[in-house]
Image 1 (cartoon, rainbow, N blue to C red):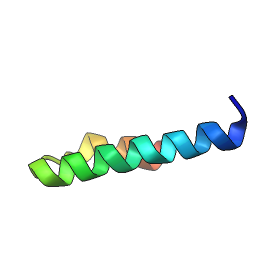
Image 2: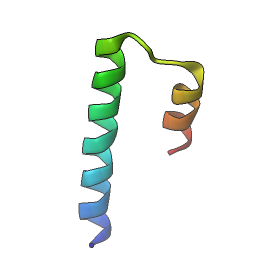
Image 3: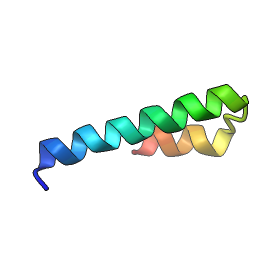
Length: 38
């Protein structure tokens, strides 16, 4: 995979994770740390 394609895929996955977390209202501190490190 090209770097650009991999980045697009990663952003799409992150967006889905964030939306799912917000929908279930379970955005924990450890998840926030994970997002900031990625």
